Length: 261
Image 1 (spheres, rainbow, N blue to C red):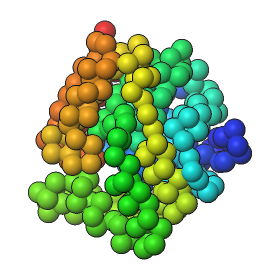
Image 2: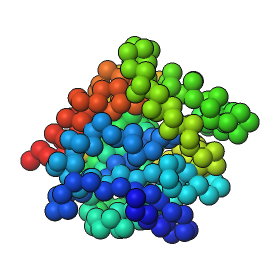
Image 3: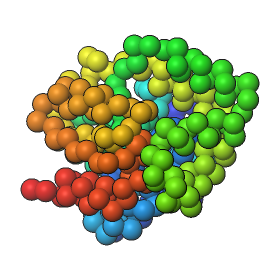
Image 4: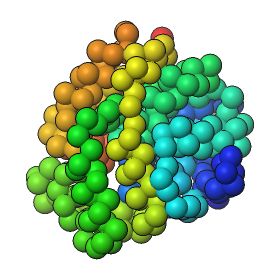
């Protein structure tokens, strides 16, 4: 796979699919996953877009320098990927951390972003303690011991029971995440503050929430929807990884939004 180089030299792994002449769509995954989080949507979307997926620093095949990381750093990493892939402008679909980086994009790279999908995400954590606790637990115990509680937050009990293979695929991504990368990204999420910048987003935007998401509550997405003038909001009966739990409806909803006139 090709490699983009971030401003600090960190290698960022990415993958491009779809027609070279099609508009670009960048995908940005959640904390503790890699670019294969989007496998269920890639076939559909790559028929319409030049699909650019990448592993955030600290994840997958990308480099994992010690943190802390910041949202500004992660946003500039994504721009380095876009530049390496030759995408002057692009659409964006990001889930969880990917939606956070998407908010940074919409506010700080507005000349490059065409349309934004912000899925299962948040804009500011007033209470930092849960993130500090997660960082300490991961540092002391490793990610394997954190994977069980994370899957309970990321998927409904019904989905975990009926789709163990899909859940196991995410578990494998999670436990393979480099610890330094996971910790650095946790610090970036803990410290983000988009309260002033997200309302300045002007790109057409769709916010997606999971009606049963305990990790990024639906009310967080509703608040982002209210912040971004003219945005749309869509809800799926899912927990946190709504694109995995509701793959076909999710793929079609995003495609319809990105291609509507």
